[in-house]
Image 1 (cartoon, one colour):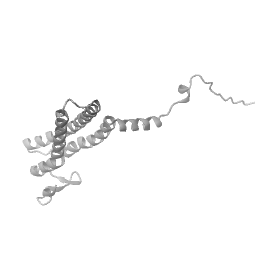
Image 2 (image 1 turned 90 degrees about the horizontal axis):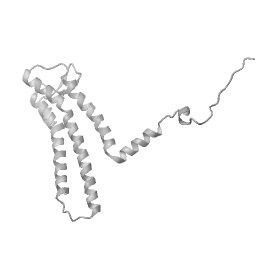
Image 3 (image 1 turned 180 degrees about the vertical axis):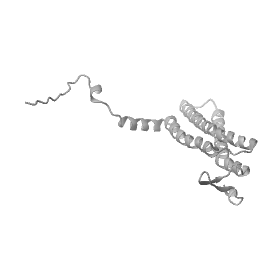
Image 4 (image 1 turned 30 degrees about the vertical axis):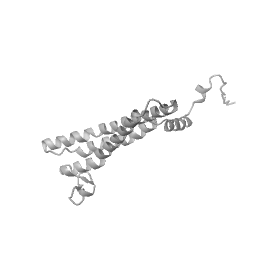
Length: 170
């Protein structure tokens, strides 16, 4: 993000009360999106494509243990690619609002909020997705969840005799 500062790409937004690349500065927004979003996603995608090709090009004369390990690795790679694809989809609203600004020339009042909402949702969504996609994390989360369950005594033990107290006024 270094080129944004000398080129006055980062400004204080009076209505939003924080500093960010202004939407009116199209090169600044494109640079920020490229360095913070597009470049890392493309690097991840290229890495996983290379790994997938390498695993698929391995010979068929391998032992069963190696094939099982490769199938497990491919499953993990597929899950990671699904998560990366969901992150790409989360960026679509911000890109649509930016395109609307480029076409019309009018800055929408909620442009920054619409841009940041999918980012905040995707950060929490990725955390939940990682818990469900990694079996070890899933078992830890389920253990923690079951440890805090509250079970009512009358529904848990229906065959037991319930104690009653009587109060006499004599």
